[in-house]
Image 1 (cartoon, rainbow, N blue to C red):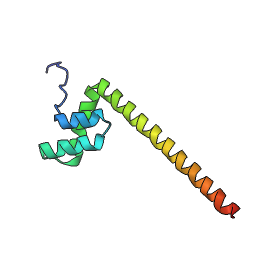
Image 2: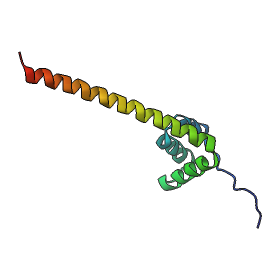
Image 3: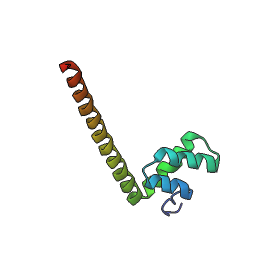
Length: 93
Protein backbone atom coordinates (compact mmCIF):
# COMPACT_ATOMS: atom_id res chain seq x y z
CA UNK A 1 0.00 0.00 0.00
CA UNK A 2 1.37 3.42 -0.89
CA UNK A 3 0.84 6.64 0.98
CA UNK A 4 0.60 8.74 -2.15
CA UNK A 5 -1.94 11.55 -1.95
CA UNK A 6 -5.00 10.86 -4.00
CA UNK A 7 -4.76 12.66 -7.32
CA UNK A 8 -7.65 14.91 -8.12
CA UNK A 9 -9.56 14.01 -11.25
CA UNK A 10 -8.85 16.24 -14.20
CA UNK A 11 -11.83 18.17 -15.44
CA UNK A 12 -12.41 19.56 -18.90
CA UNK A 13 -11.46 23.23 -19.23
CA UNK A 14 -15.09 24.18 -19.82
CA UNK A 15 -16.09 22.53 -16.54
CA UNK A 16 -13.35 24.32 -14.60
CA UNK A 17 -14.40 27.62 -16.17
CA UNK A 18 -18.02 26.97 -15.20
CA UNK A 19 -16.91 26.37 -11.61
CA UNK A 20 -14.96 29.64 -11.62
CA UNK A 21 -18.21 31.38 -12.51
CA UNK A 22 -20.10 29.55 -9.77
CA UNK A 23 -21.98 27.24 -12.15
CA UNK A 24 -21.82 23.84 -10.49
CA UNK A 25 -24.66 22.48 -12.62
CA UNK A 26 -22.98 23.54 -15.87
CA UNK A 27 -19.73 21.92 -14.75
CA UNK A 28 -21.57 18.66 -14.06
CA UNK A 29 -23.25 18.83 -17.48
CA UNK A 30 -19.91 19.31 -19.22
CA UNK A 31 -18.38 16.35 -17.38
CA UNK A 32 -21.39 14.17 -18.23
CA UNK A 33 -21.23 15.05 -21.91
CA UNK A 34 -17.47 14.74 -22.33
CA UNK A 35 -17.09 11.51 -20.33
CA UNK A 36 -20.45 9.99 -21.25
CA UNK A 37 -21.24 9.15 -17.60
CA UNK A 38 -24.32 9.39 -15.42
CA UNK A 39 -25.42 12.31 -13.29
CA UNK A 40 -24.39 10.82 -9.94
CA UNK A 41 -20.94 9.87 -11.19
CA UNK A 42 -20.37 13.28 -12.82
CA UNK A 43 -21.47 15.04 -9.64
CA UNK A 44 -19.01 12.93 -7.66
CA UNK A 45 -16.18 13.78 -10.05
CA UNK A 46 -16.89 17.51 -9.82
CA UNK A 47 -17.21 17.39 -6.02
CA UNK A 48 -13.92 15.47 -5.74
CA UNK A 49 -12.23 18.06 -7.92
CA UNK A 50 -13.60 20.89 -5.76
CA UNK A 51 -12.45 19.12 -2.60
CA UNK A 52 -8.93 18.96 -4.03
CA UNK A 53 -8.96 22.63 -5.06
CA UNK A 54 -9.66 24.76 -1.96
CA UNK A 55 -8.85 28.05 -3.74
CA UNK A 56 -11.38 27.29 -6.49
CA UNK A 57 -13.97 26.21 -3.90
CA UNK A 58 -13.48 29.50 -2.05
CA UNK A 59 -13.83 31.51 -5.29
CA UNK A 60 -16.97 29.59 -6.21
CA UNK A 61 -18.46 30.24 -2.77
CA UNK A 62 -17.72 33.96 -3.16
CA UNK A 63 -19.39 34.07 -6.58
CA UNK A 64 -22.46 32.32 -5.20
CA UNK A 65 -22.63 34.68 -2.20
CA UNK A 66 -22.46 37.69 -4.52
CA UNK A 67 -25.22 36.24 -6.69
CA UNK A 68 -27.41 35.68 -3.63
CA UNK A 69 -26.86 39.28 -2.49
CA UNK A 70 -27.83 40.59 -5.93
CA UNK A 71 -30.96 38.45 -5.95
CA UNK A 72 -32.00 39.73 -2.52
CA UNK A 73 -31.47 43.36 -3.62
CA UNK A 74 -33.52 42.73 -6.74
CA UNK A 75 -36.29 41.09 -4.73
CA UNK A 76 -36.40 43.97 -2.22
CA UNK A 77 -36.60 46.44 -5.11
CA UNK A 78 -39.53 44.59 -6.65
CA UNK A 79 -41.32 44.45 -3.29
CA UNK A 80 -40.84 48.19 -2.73
CA UNK A 81 -42.15 48.89 -6.24
CA UNK A 82 -45.16 46.61 -5.67
CA UNK A 83 -45.89 48.30 -2.33
CA UNK A 84 -45.75 51.71 -4.03
CA UNK A 85 -48.15 50.61 -6.76
CA UNK A 86 -50.50 49.06 -4.20
CA UNK A 87 -50.44 52.31 -2.20
CA UNK A 88 -51.33 54.36 -5.29
CA UNK A 89 -54.14 51.96 -6.23
CA UNK A 90 -55.60 52.03 -2.71
CA UNK A 91 -55.47 55.84 -2.51
CA UNK A 92 -57.25 56.13 -5.83
CA UNK A 93 -57.93 59.39 -7.73
